[in-house]
Image (cartoon, rainbow, N blue to C red):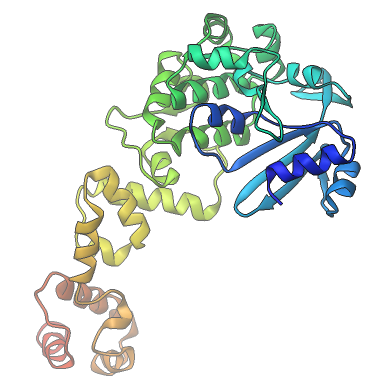
Length: 356
């Protein structure tokens, strides 16, 4: 069952159903998308009955994953009385009214099961003019949810579009509203900017609109966009309140440490995870091939690769356990630097001459 079959099945059960939003926008721009939003007159319960599926409802939305495509099916709705960016929601049976609650005209274009375009709010015209403009009153839309300011900037950067003058003016005079957003929501939107090849354009637009300070982010002049979004975050200075897992923070710190060392050598590769080194290498201008070649040329890749076992090392040191760590580190550094062969004979001779 694909997206168009879902539309057909919903229609066969007497409901209206359309693909809407980003998928249609990208389709008209000739861009492939694996995220599909479907809007329908069917309630979540009716959607499950029509499609013969069992799915949990989340705020009136049914989420499916089909052959790598993420599909959200949402009931036509009307929103009012926004409070802390959470509106009262009422299900309705009117497509155009549902579209009017959305953010930007380019995100309110629909497609039916025959790929026919339905565009009551002239979003296609905005696409052709390469312009981001809100649906209805700009101030109302952006005050309802200030995150839309960041979303507008992201879309403008990704597609190379301009921001409507009313959006620009609102951002310039109301940038402080960004501070009302949770750090989690801000990070999610920033991740969507940083993960794109147009990340630098997005950051530059944030800078021109003086939003970086509001977001509590500082971008270096020599910023390099990396494939791993955590590599991008590693280059930024940002408020501690941005939410990262313990593992993510460790990765960011590892990348920063490697970059601060100003070089990648065998010692670096031995001490750090390869993916962290590769990410730091992107920032520092190392090719992936060069780093992989360095790995392949390493005589050892972990302490377990030492020719002398821990038991043998302890015996040679006459059970002087406190000394063992220093000796082992010395052996590893000398082997990696090419000043000592990783063989039992050479290691024993070196220990006798330097550590006994």
